[in-house]
Every structure is written in C-alpha cells, then in structure tokens.
Length: 563
Image 1: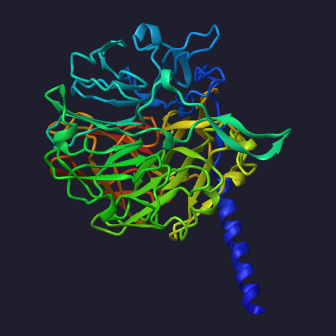
Image 2: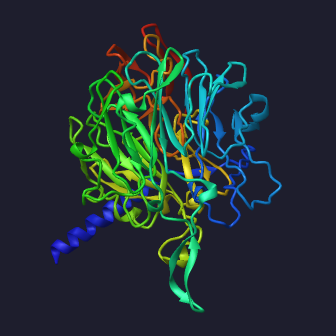
C-alpha cells in the first residue's frame, strides 16, 4: 500500500512539473493579422486523384537580405473536373515586421505547375538565397538575382527531374564549397492513369460495403531519387555514380547530417511503406547505403513504416545526431537514438513517444528547443490523407491538431499539447512545417502549410524567461551559408551541439540560423565551430540573448538583440 502511494505521489509530482513547464509555452496564430493569406488548394474535384493527398510545404528564408524571414508557399494546379475561378500559383510573401506583402509577380516565382515542396540554398555562393521547387512534373530552380527578382535557370544548370518530386535538400557532399542537391521522388503516377480504389466501410449502411477513397501507396511503384552534384555553379546528375540512383523506393522526407561525426554530411531518407535509407558519405560525394546495418531501416519490430517527415537532432546532448521520423496512423512516429559511431536503436516507446502518436498521421516535424531550456523538444504536424477516413475507421479523423512533445531532460518526452492548448489545438490537415525565429525575438516560431486550407503562422509567445544565444554563419572557404557546420557551446549547464542545416521536416526549408536555449545560464563560456572541411574556430565569453554573425576566419559581431 505504501509502495502504491509513493508511486501515485511521484506520478502527481511529475504531472505538476510537466504542467508548469507547459504553461511556459504558448503559440498564437497571427497569419491573418499580418495579411499572410495563403490558402492551399489541392486542385481536386472529388475524383480522388492520388496526388491530392500529398499537400505542400513552405520555405522560410531571407530572400531580400533585409534581416527577416520571408515565406514561399508551393501551390497545386487544377486537376480534371476542377471548376473554381481561383488562380492557383506558388506565392512569395515578403516579411516586414510581421506584415506580409505578396511579391510573387514582381519576384517572378509564381509557377503554376502542380508544386509540392521547396528547398533554399545559395548554390552559386553570391550571398543571395536561391530557390528550388519540386513539382508533380518538371522541377524548377530559381536563381536569386539579388534585386528582389529570380530567374528560372532549370535547363541552363542541368536540373531535369520530371518525376513526382517531394522533399529536397541542399548540402555540400564533398566539402568543395558548393552546395549539391538531393531530391526525393515518390511514385510512378499519372493523372491519365489514376486507379479507382475503394475501402471497406467500418459500419456498412443500406447494403453499401465499400466507398471510394485514395489508393494505398502499394498500388504504385517507387521511383529513384536524384542527386545533383554542383560543379562550380552548374549541376550534374550523379545519381547513379554516387550510389543513390540504384534504389527505386517511395521517397518522402530527406535530411542530410553527419551521423557518424566524421566531418561530412550523410543522408537519411524517409520512405512510404519501404525501408528507410541511410547513405553514409565517404567524403568525396559517394555513398554507401547502410540503414539496415546501422539500425534505422526498419522500426524496432523489424517492420517498414510509412515514413513522411524526418529530422536530425541531438536530443540527449551526447554530441551525436539522433533521428526522428513521422509515420502513418496506426504506426508510431519513430525515434532512433544514436549510440555513438552512427549505430542506432529504436527508443520510441521507452522514451514516451509511441502511444501519443498512434492515432495521428504525421508529416512535418522538427527537433527544436521550443522553451529554450537547453533540451530539444519535438513538434509534429498532423493530418490524415483520406478525407473520409471516419467511414473506414472511427478512431481516426481527417483534420487533426498538431503536437508538441516536451523533453523532460531525463531521457523521456511528454505530450503536452492539450496542456498548452490555445491555437495549438486548431484542427487542420497539416503537411509542411517550417521553423525559425520569424519575429527575431530569440525563440523559434512555426509556419504551417495545410492541405486544402489556410496557412498558419504560430508565433512562440511562451513566458519561458530563459536565456538564449543565436548564430548566423558565413563561410569563406566552405559554402557561403556554412551548411554542415557543427557548433558546440559550453555553459555552466554543460555542452550543446547543433548543426547549420535548413533541410528536414516535410517538403520544407527552415531558418539557417542556429539558436541555443541556455536556461538560466548568464554566459556562454566558449563556442567552437567545425567548418565544413575540418577548419575549427573558437570564441570565448559571449553574452546571451543576442544573435552573433560569424564570418569564417574573419570576424564575430552582434547583429541584433532579442528579449
């Protein structure tokens, strides 16, 4: 009896502590307030074209170099039978102190293809961020001209992906100073050959046993991903030469990162109902697929899951990248814990991430310190792919709320979504989610693209009162954005590591700035940067609550203050 009472008391204490932490987090949707009025339309007409269910992503990047993050939204295009009078085109919104202006036409990026995702990167090292758009059809590469406009250089630069492009990522595969490009392709599918699929009703009525719905991905064959090598600003298709093109799977999410801490960026790919892939880089732009050997191809039960979104992050502060993958409803999202040397184990259930995710269908995600306590939390964007799912399974819903999992600093996470409440509980069919300090106050905000719905801008308004420090890096001998750089900070509370990497999530690109939460620490005693190519720099005694601009081998300076 005493033992039971002690356990009960302990549970209450843990709950109260978690509840208090949750009260320090708050998110407010201010999209409408600032005229961020993007509405996604999947272009469908009730014919259940498979592509309709994928949704789209969003990219946040400073396209005009004015110091704040702008937003680019891929849009679909009309499918047969669509009869609305709305013009469907991709949209670019300029951010001026959270007032948003549609600059699509003047920028020249209003593509009217059936667009899916996007990726941002300075491929030509001229200091302006360029834009890659994945399409159901021919992808597009927009070169930033540096004057608020873009030029379509797709054919000129050798980009010729004509499949169902999904997530994409810029990274430097061989540390030569130029960003290469990885593109996931999904399935071999065409509008003219759209199968009619049905599913059994859970509670049949009037003699009807089946109803029309979107097809299962098993109906379609996978397509090989693409790897474009950047040779002095022009791209070469090295999919086969690199070892990537030999796999024909259903690619969805992709994130590059140095999982084995050897100084080059590896690639992890989340596949839909196929084994996930982990390409280990030999440092020269060639890759060995090692997912099965390293424990991240299947879940802990040896099963392939329906992977959607993916992210890297060091959740336990041991200096090694862990992997988080979002999956289909009825499956848990999966957390692969890096055991060192790049060997992983499925820790999903033991750290509390299994049961809370089982009834959700998850897409965009990020390992991110939302409360600035120095430990990475998890944000997940949810929404089912089947619009009439309640006919087939009463446990699931099409529109779902997104989730926040709080890192409890003891090797476990808690789903605190309902404790936070407010705008976080808004139900939609969410897909891409991009993360960055959109209001420049030192904490991370969230931009969400919803399938067939309004975009949301969730501003982090938490009263966490924790200190932070942020970094914007500029490479000289490495790529201009310093993508792939590893930053290690040291405070009285210990060390933290993070990597410059805008890729990850689902169909999106994130803020390249790196923000560390440091709780109540009042001084960052040291910061070391491993620049791509093995060069290292160290700085001492930095004050918190500032962004620092660090130019490789040249200077460090304060660029803005926050709280």
